[in-house]
Image 1 (cartoon, rainbow, N blue to C red):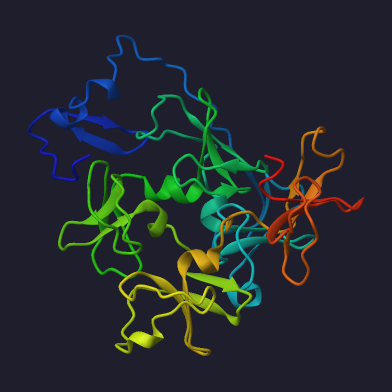
Image 2 (image 1 turned 180 degrees about the horizontal axis):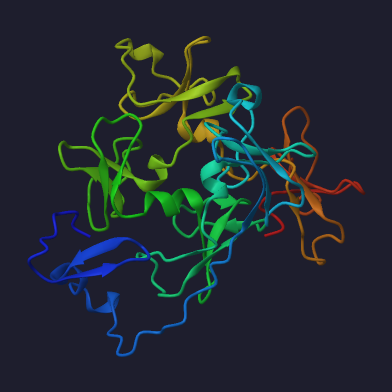
Length: 341
């Protein structure tokens, strides 16, 4: 909670499942954040494996696996260059390092996403219930507010879901932050502006060595991203060294941008754009995903599409379907992504 050293000469509270430790004063600082347990429950949650290994290589790596979230076998690969326009179906961030892919359909998983536990204990969650890994559900993350159809951890009691990016960002301990040389730590009651966007959130990741603080949404931003305005991948950039003020514009919305805040940049085309302009409102909803709409909305499954070249009118509100939409492949039906909800 305070990210200061815990002396073993004194008492402390420690959880072996979450690997977190608290000073006694920190743990008991807020009376609403804890409860006294007289008899600890001996029953543990179901942590059965979610991956079955079918083939191994000589180095002991699982090369072909079965994963409970996908119907086909998945194969290990490190050929990132072949799939630089693909994203992981677990976290919906661009493919990087080692990953598994399906030879029969457009499905990818980072190796770290494959190795996620089925059940997870998260200390900052208000309920003390276990969080269970889920997939193939459209949800809104309780931490960052983004809609997503990827992996999530769902609370057994309150049913709220947290995306993988926020689970990682809100995990206690030292984090490596791209764009900063020192490790950053999670502080739950820190106030101050985020270096990436300038917003003031209470919960943020901060550096002990210098005046650097980052909210968890910016900590989880994709390092690279694509946008229709540029044929190349755009890279997340942390400071604009161009002193010429007239160059500090977004090439997507054509509005002025603050050179001190993070933005996406293409060195080949000299394209600069706001983070929100590149990612859009729903960056973590994968195109082609199937959405089972309520029967009162439509009787067929709907596919997530992104309309760029033509803009049909929404079948529900009548307005043009700019950007993300839900389309029926069986009949002439299309709605804004927001309308069925």
